[in-house]
Length: 226
Length: 232
Figure 1 (tube, rainbow over the protein chains, first blue to last red):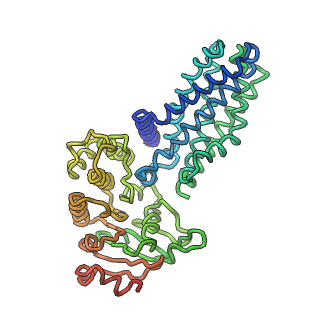
Figure 2: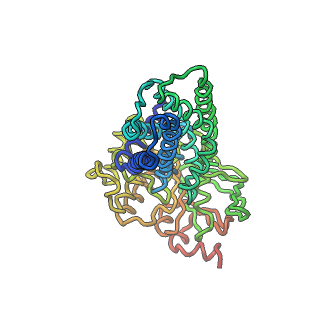
Figure 3: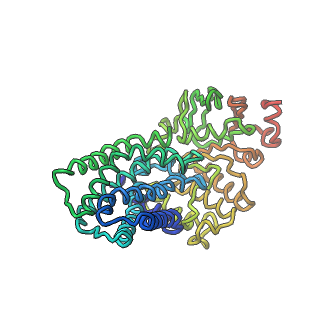
């Protein structure tokens, strides 16, 4: 119980700090809306085309916007050497990591949930026809993005070019999760529920989340302290 | 048992040995001043003692335990170069946050008490980004002392402090010593440090050049130890 209280303390601290400055969430939200807007003007896709590319477009936007947010996760601790104080505190590195993941998860999900209606309006798509299943895919895909982004944010926190390094490291690892999320989202936005032909993508997404959450929790102490 | 024991610690940055076979002990209730020129390895050694970094060879024990164990971390207070508080949070929110992370029974009460002891009670709800440098430093001191650690690790604690913050810190350090707590501090400000130190260790290019009790000659003339044991 004490462990989860520590996780919550870190998560609330990050959320409070971010909501006071709104640095990352504003940048992330603005980026996703601008990209959606630019794509709608640049390609003016038909309804048929839109159904085919919706998953890919949405997850590319989510991945890039999410990275903007995740870059700040551990970088936020650098001014005033706050990371040292967190490492010195008697909480497991995994609790620190999980707290940061939860805060990032909430923030990235918030950006996604604002972006979805914007996507629906700009592209004239009824995206909510399979909403409960779409929400499940969003929750699973965003967790994959968050867990990988947060562990690599910890790994690259002391690198000067971390803004460049983070996407270079995270996107290749995220390919299986993003591919699954894209396929499922394309189907769900098109009104097709998850069935026998794409349930493997859902299994892949769940498996990815479980495996990388476990690996990250085991490795984070080494990543932070060496 | 020593409060802090450094046993044959080596640390390399690439091929360069930043610390070479350092062996030190600090008894409970003692104050060890770690001195040396820039680049001598003081901060590297303190970071290893604090558990932020690992030694390539040798080991560090705090009260006989690994510095990274949860129980040891509860007993350690670290004041480094940075103030380790969040600019976006208020003074009270910062201290309450650390109180919760250290599992204090009543984090808010402890935070308020330390804000009062460091003279920050009137600005407790002010955001740290609006604080003067001196106020930020005093808040950092409150943060390091908040959980009543039995071992205090201080890296250049007097650097960039205003007069009031120096007075606050010296008073708190004296109280800590009187309460039987152990202090290890790296410093260039020998006069302030040697007023408190019971022991002195001089690092010279990663090697221990002197380790012994603080003598009246050292306290009277801060340059004495460098003249006797330091580099020419």
